[in-house]
Image (cartoon, rainbow, N blue to C red):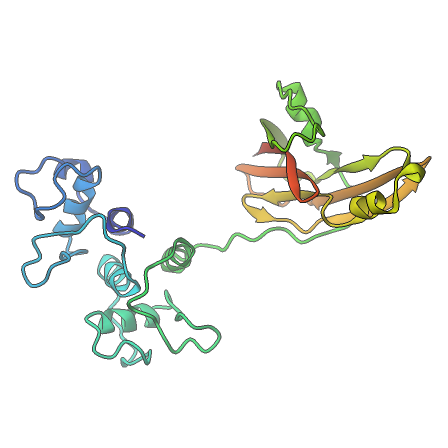
Length: 292
């Protein structure tokens, strides 16, 4: 992650910071290399709070806004922003001896914000590696004591109302050409609402007419995992129940997921994808507002 992106972290986490906007255009400022940068105000704000000292010690006249942040640097940002003081006796990891950030790393580990970089052993911190965005999510989640978001468990039932993503999207103007086999992914966006505490389920899939006339290769391709319906909730892929059956010479592949009314009262995003031959032919993005 680049340093100018990380700076927003410090502004967010450190309570009582002066508005970053105040620092924009500050004559001279703390650093020489951030003039005109979109994030200059935030850079100057976290410098004023001691969250960053600069990137060229001992002068520290530069911030290096376009450089990537290492895990060691990130440890220092978080420790200064959140005031972690306990180092747990030090030497928590075997690969940071002599690092400028060793004490910050130990404090971050003692606070439980980092677990290490080589699970399950986790006796290394990898201080010189760059911070990846998924790692940053874990750092922030632990630092802010956020409740981890997890997808609901899979339950094979059809209780409550059906949320038909295709019908909702069509009613709101979606004119995507489905099953046109043009190699192009059609995308539709729509919205709906459900009452809090009320169960609902999503059920979609595929069907193939004249099943008995299909060649063995065509039948195998339809029955395989390359033809499917995928569903995600707020970015989490959901494990769907799958049912395959032939009725009146039509083959059906049905995928469904039961929601048991335990979604929080906010807007959740469902994304459904109809996949044929491992190619997404249609994607429906449905924002579901859970209302009181």
